[in-house]
Amino acid sequence: MTDALHCPLCDSAGATLFHRDARREYWRCPVCALVYVPPAYHLSPEEEKAEYDLHQNCVTDPGYRRFLSRLSEPLLARLPAGASGLDFGCGPGPALAAMLTEAGCTVQLYDVFYHPDASVLQRDYDFVTATEVVEHLQRPGGELARIWQLLAPGGYLGIMTKHVIDADAFASWHYKNDPTHICFFSNQTWAWWCRQRHATVERIGADVVLLRKMPGDGQVDCSSMSA
Image (cartoon, rainbow, N blue to C red; front, side):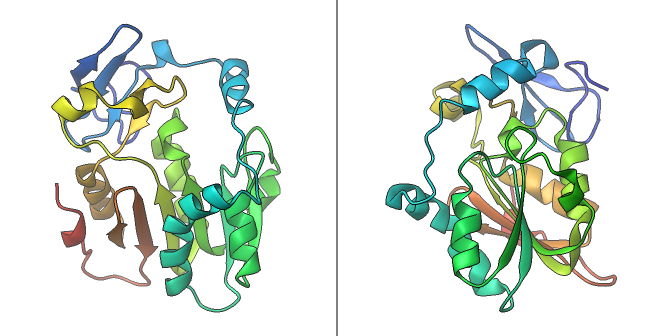
C-alpha cells in the first residue's frame, strides 16, 4: 500500500498525523513508530537525483571521513579480517567503501543513481552499510528486507541516520527539512525491526545502529534499543 495511512515500513494501517509544516505532512505508524512523508509529497526520481548532485562528498575529504568513522570504526571492531561487504546507497563519492577497503575489507558498491549494478545484490556478504540512506527510501520495508537477505549468518547491517526523539523536537528539527528525507526512524522503530527477525541491535552514539543477523534460532535481544 502507498496511501498516507499505510506505513511504508511495516504496511500497517492507522497512521496518525505527527507534524505538518508549510511544505509537507509527516505521519507516524502506531505499530513500528516510523515517521514518514506520504507519497503525495515525494520528489520525482529526476528531482531527487538533482538534489543529490548538489552534494560534494569527496572520498579524500578528512571531515567527511571523520563523519563516516562513527560507523566504520565500531563496525571494523566487530568484523573478521578480510570481511566482504556492500556499501548500499554509496552515492557518487563512496568514501566509506574506500575507508573499509583500506582497512582490509572487500567492498562492492550499489546505488540506484550512481552505481546501479544489480549483480552485486545477488550474493552474500559479511556486512552491508547504509550511511545516510534509509531516510531517503520510498519503500523502506522492501529495501531493508532485500539487503537483510544479503547478509550471511552472523553478518552486520550498519546504518547511519538521525533519529526521531519526540514531537516537540521534531517540530524544530532541521533534518526533516531536506526534501529527499521521507522516512525517520527512532529507537522504538529499530526495536520493532529487531523483534521481527532473529537479530541483535546496538546503538552506537546518536545516529548509528548495528544490526546483526544471528545464526540459527534463539532469543532476540532488543534491550539496547528501548523506546
